[in-house]
Length: 509
Image (cartoon, rainbow, N blue to C red; front, side, top):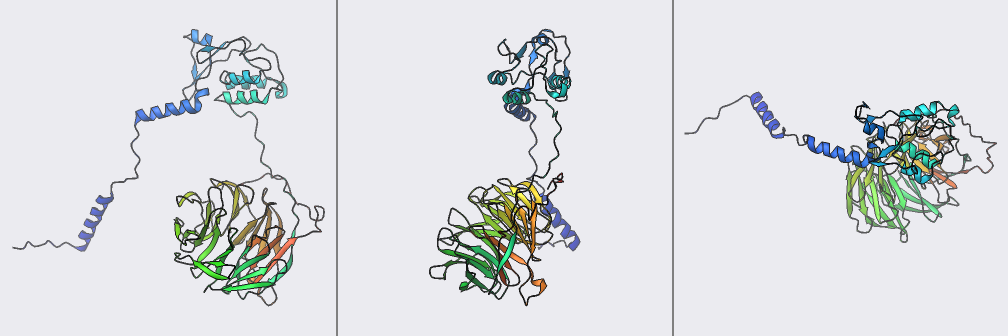
C-alpha cells in the first residue's frame, strides 16, 4: 500500500527549505578561535622582552632596594615609577650589576659610556624638570651630578641614546607645521608641431627605444609609425577590426605589441611588418598593455575586470589577475616589487605579486575611476590619475605621499620624465604640468583643435616623452598628434615660480 505524501503549501515548503539551508551554512568558519589566556600571556611576555627589553624595567637605586617600606607609585601600565633623588649621588643598579665610577654619568660622556648608560637614565619627569630650570634650554642637569650646569653641546649619539633609553619620554619640542618646499623651476613647454593622418581618435602612443620613430594606435583601426624628427608617416599597419587602445615597442626584441577593443592582443614583427603571434583569452575589449622590463612577459588589462600575464614566446597565459570589480583601465610593470600595478574603473589601484598572481595591496583612496598610472623613472614612487585627484604613492606598500589637486577633469593619461615633470592629459583637452616633488602646477595648456574639428573634439587620450625627454607627444581626439618642446628662451625671470610657502592642508587620504 502506497503511503500518501502529505501536501504542504508552497509557503511552508519554502520556509522549510530556507531552514535547511540555514542549518547547513550556519557553522561560520570565519569566526575567530577562542583566545587561550595562558598562551596569550606567554606571547605577550615574549613580545615585551623582545621589543621592549631595554626599557621594560627602569633602573632602581640601591636605596630603593634596601628600603622595602618605601611606597612606589605605579603608572597606568603597571610599571613602577621611582622618585628621582636630585642634588645627591645615587648609585643605579642595572640588571643586578652596580654601576662603577667609570660608567656613571660624567660631565661629557663618551660614546661608549653613553651607550652603556642607555638603560641607566632617570625618569622622564626628572629630565623635564631639569630642562625647565635651564635658561633657553642650553644647559642640561643630571640627577647624578651636583647642582651645576653643563652645556648641551653633547655628542649626538649620547643625546639619541638618552632619548631611546627612556620608555616614557614625551615630546618636549613642538613640531613645526609642514610647509610646502620651494618647487624646482621647470621651463614651460610650447607646441611646435601638429601631425595629422589618422582618420579617427588617436588613442595610444609609444616611442621606440632608439628614439628614431614613434607609433600610434587609433579608432580608425590602424597602427601608424611616424618619423620622430620630421613627423612624416613611415608605415601603416592594418589588422585590428576595432579601435586600437594600446601599443608598446619592445626593448628586448624587434617586436611591437598592440591591443584593441576587438579583444585581440597582437605581436608584430617589425622586420617583416606582420603579425606573428596572437594572445587569446580576454573576454572583452583590451584597454592597455605593458611589457616587463627584464623578462619576456606581457601584461594586458581589459574591460572584463582582469589583467592577464602572457609569456611572450609561448603565447601562454601565465596568470589571470582577478580581483577588480570593474574594467581595468591601465597597467604598468617594473623590475622591482611590486612588479605589476593596475588602475581600474572600480576606483581602486592594485599592486600585484607577479609570482603568485595575487594582490599584494589594494589602494582604495580614489573616489572615482583610475584611468592612468605612471611610475617615476628614478624614484621608487608612482602616481595615479582620477577625476577627483592625482595622487602620489610610495612603493612597495603604496603608502600615500600627497595629492596634486587642480586638474578637475577626467584624466586619461599621465607621464613623467627624469627631471620630475609630471604631465596629466584630460578628456576636455587640457594638459597640466606639475613639479613631481612638491606637486606645484607650473603650467596649464589647452591647445586649439585642428581646423575643421568641433571644439568638443578637444581631448587628450595619451601622452609620452621621447627617449631624450626633450619632446612631449600627445594623442588627441581631433585625430592629430601634437608635439611639444621646452621653451628655450624662457628663464626664471621671464616665467617665475608663483609660489607661496603656505602651510599645507594635506588630506589624510
